[in-house]
Length: 113
Image 1 (cartoon, helix red, strand yellow):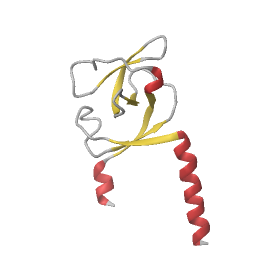
Image 2 (tube, rainbow, N blue to C red):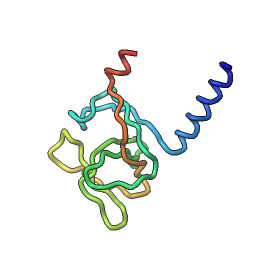
Image 3 (cartoon, rainbow, N blue to C red):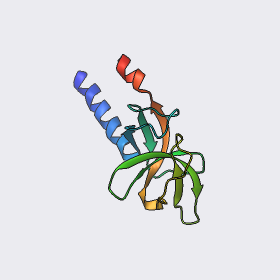
Image 4 (cartoon, rainbow, N blue to C red):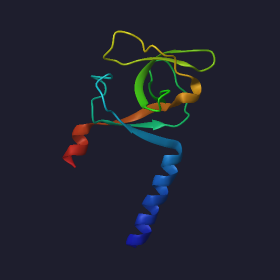
């Protein structure tokens, strides 16, 4: 019984990883919406629109979580951290967008468990 339960959990996790990802917030650029230590779950390759919080990969390979402030005709994004008054310098090509954040797990919840 226990082995079957763990097998079910493993299969569900694998299926979820195929369609969703997660990232740990490591800075304060999205404060107050997101705080350092929060975990964001995102849906891979889902449509994105202005106002969404998205995960994308920078040219140096780092993952970034910022808000979409513009979408170009080829799907490229203009982004900005909520704590900043200025838009991000670089445009995010569509192929670098991992997907929109759908769930935030606050750091406080994780500490309590």
